[in-house]
Length: 259
Image 1 (cartoon, rainbow, N blue to C red):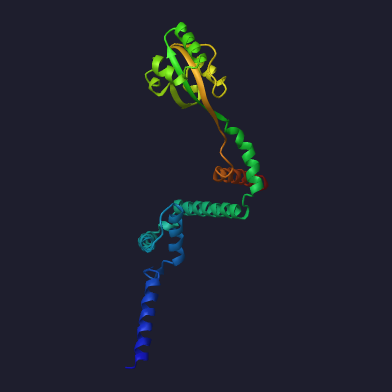
Image 2 (cartoon, helix red, strand yellow):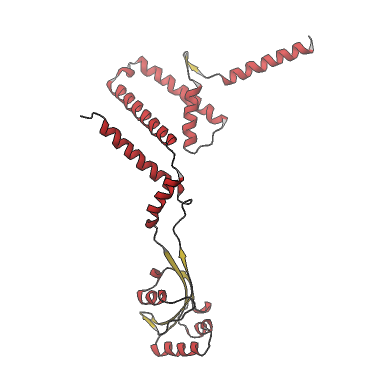
């Protein structure tokens, strides 16, 4: 046998194997089409599953099982029942409705102009937030607090006084540092006095709360801006499309003869 003839036979054999591997299954002569397999695989991918050859094999096996059961149901006449026919009509209606919506979304993409306009509307839903980095010195009496203010005016460092005099165990070791907080974190008299301070400023008079008397220093303040349009893009696109679909359905219903 010539080398060429052997190569031809091998190529033919490989082609036969490849064709067999690609062949779709049949059940009692009824073929399970590749389109049906692909449709289920796409649905599983849309649900976040990773497509692979094993997935296609699993789907084909599931469809074979379904076909075996379908044929048995047909033998018993179940495909003629009123309930089944109603289910099929509903399934077809829902499937076509979903396809129509998907095609509508595909052919009506959201533009940047529309996205920016929607962003301007929703931006108000994200109120500006301010965080304050404050220090304090807590003492029991007003006289002690006033003495601290005098010491600060004479140049005594705030953090040194806090370590020496504060009765707040949570912050005195850090020079009275309370970290970054929103005003609502603190009791009202404290937060009301804190937000009136400029950066680096100390309260001019002691601030009384149920804990004692505070001398407050504002180290810094920062403003948390609303999320950018790019950060909100997925939500904005969904919001716009939802509004469009709602308007589309309303319009179609208005044109239809519904009794």
